[in-house]
Amino acid sequence: MKADKIIIAGGSGFLGKALTKTFLQKGIEVIILSRKAIPEDFVKTVVWDGRTIGEWAENLNGSSALINLTGRSVNCRYTERHRAEIIDSRTLSTRVLGKAISQCPSPPRIWLNASTATIYKHSYDHPNDEETGVMDSSPAGRDRFSVEVAKAWEKELYFAHTAKTHKVALRISIVLGLQKGSAYDIMHTLVQRGLGGHMGNGRQVISWIHVDDFCRAVQWILSKPSPANAYNLASPGALTNRNFMEIFRKVSGRSFGLPAPHFLLEIAAFFMRTETELILKSRYVSPGRLLSEGFIFQYPDIESALTNLRNKKVD
Image (cartoon, rainbow, N blue to C red):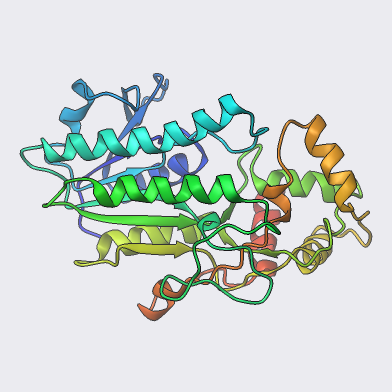
């Protein structure tokens, strides 16, 4: 990948930190756009509000790439206020970045904008790739709001007037890494406490990607002269929640995990101030474009991914 300066909007979170570490190791300058200053000596942080053009926009000039990961966490109850914050944080930040690029004398060659694998329809038996995937909500997935957010997010990206900058939507699945509060961290805690059984009916498909493969896939896309307009960032090893938790217990050395039926999940979600959709929607996603282009996953199956993370956690 030939790049000397990459701008990461919303780069203070889990994925932004992972990408920053990867780029810095390759000698690439990274500038993070964040809503608040980050006390880090090794990377430059520029404060922005994610809504209006300011001095921060000057950093785009002469940059090689822009990666936008901005977005309020969806791990909350979908109250009216939270819904507005979720959609505004994604659409308004994407909109203002598009405006900034359009006014930039020397804009970045490529703009990668986060999206979500949740954009695809709830499915138990049909893998959704970029060519044939169905982007729609489903009563069974209880995901109308989430799909609306995903579509609005990508609409802002594709409608941005950036003639000299190629735009790519990253439809990101669950990223497995050791960050505190991440999906892996939460499930590891459940398994250790004997609560690592299947959730709901256990049939819902979990699409995931190891954080190292996530970073490698982003580099792969950046290195391409003419990448596609959208990529599914998911491993080829999607599997049911029942099988996922079974392998998680095996890797963790736990023979038993208490299952959580739907009604218990609803109660737990209420008290934990989150939504069961995050657990119960079947996100069956295939990385069709990455595979057709020859990308090789370092962790294509869940057992190798979880074993790697377990060993890192022990170290």
